[in-house]
Every structure is written in C-alpha cells, then in structure tokens.
Image 1 (cartoon, helix red, strand yellow):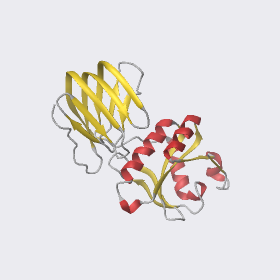
Image 2 (cartoon, rainbow, N blue to C red):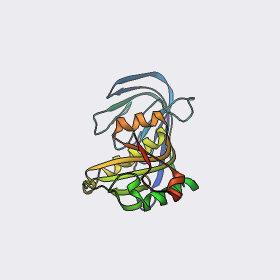
Image 3 (tube, one colour):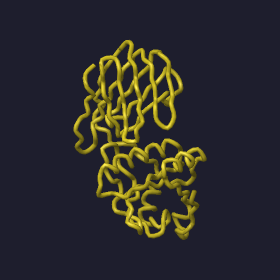
Image 4 (spheres, helix red, strand yellow):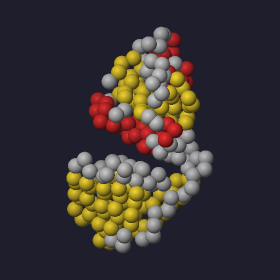
Amino acid sequence: MGPLRRPAVRGYPPVTMRLVIARCSVDYRGRLTAHLPTATRLIMVKADGCVAIHADGGAYKPLNWMNAPNTLVEEEARWVVTNPKGEELTIQIEEVVSDRHFDLGPDPGLEKDGVEAHLQELLAAKPEVLEEGLVVVRREYPTDIGPVDLLCRSEDGDTVAVEIKRKGEMDGVEQLTRYLDRLGNDSRLHPLRGVLAATIIAPQAKVLAAARGITCVEVDYEQLRGAPSNHLRLF
C-alpha cells in the first residue's frame, strides 16, 4: 500500500476519498482502551485526514475513528494513526481485499436550510445574543474542510467560532470540533473557543460539548426575528 495522498487545497477543497476493505483488527489507546477483533471491515480515509473503521451495519456510525488533525504512518501490515492529544489507533491488516482512491471533485459544503441560513443572518446582526460584547469578524470563515458560520471576537480578545444549527445534535458538536482543530493551527486566532448555537440542543450534544469545552446557547428564533435580543439560555 502506498502513502496516503493529501491534495493541495485551493478554494473549495477537492475531496479525495480512500476506501480500503481489509481483514483487520483495531486497537485504540487514549482516554480509554478498546479492541476490535479480526474481521473484514471498511477503512475510510477522508481528504482532511480523518480515519474511520466501519462494519457492514450500524448505519453511518463507525466502530472506531480518529479525527483530524492526525498523522497516519503506513507499514506493510499495520497502520498507526496518532493525534496531538496522544491518542493512538493501530490497525493490524491481515489481508487487503480492495484499496482504491476516489476523487469526488470540489465540495461546496452543506447548504443550510432556510431557518439555519436566517438564524445565521440574525445572529450575525446581533452577536450579543450569544455572548455579551461579542463582535463578528467574518461570516462563513473559510477552512480547508468547510466554512465556519461565524468567526467572532470576545471582549477578552478570544477568537470564538460559532456553529449554527436549527437543532443541535452530536454531529454538530463533532463538526465544530473539527473546525476548532483546523483553526487552532493558526496561532493568530489564539486563544480560541467554540459556541454551538441552535433553537434547541439535544441533551447528549450538551454533554459532549461540555467535554470538548464548547459552549451551548439555545436561542429563540421567533424572538430574534422581532423581539428583544437578550433572551437566551446558557448550558
């Protein structure tokens, strides 16, 4: 197997997806330890470096994964994925059934529905709803994995990345985490933190956000459209 190819990024990032079907076992070492015994699985390597291991079941959720930024070292029968937090994902490969790269072409990113798009406009005009003294630096701030809805500056000088959803779920927390990882590579944006804003946020998403150091803010869409902007709930 050859080295992982990561294309240069200009404008919208080209999405080169690597799909490997292999008989393998997987070990994770980090905040806890986990072991997947040998079986035939799909190993997905995305253009941003994210590595995910899937079984033939369980819908979209991988059995194990390592988000970017990370380092992937490939040996003849072993992959070792590490990240700056010291976590390690080791894939022992017994047999490769298929190893293919797919160029998916330019990706403009997910288009928000009408409510989310309007929420972004409203919150960009009234960022103090999210945090007193917050000032918008830019809407749709670009990263190589997609745009951050709002990039703001706090009264204390922190850079605040805001992800806006109609309903805040765990995947919104994961998305914002990936953006924060990318933004964190730019020292000019330090200190950096994140805010997930939505009309309602699921309890599980709040727990995950708290573990990631992300603030959740529930906003009242109808009040934002016409009522005073100081109504909010912080969690």
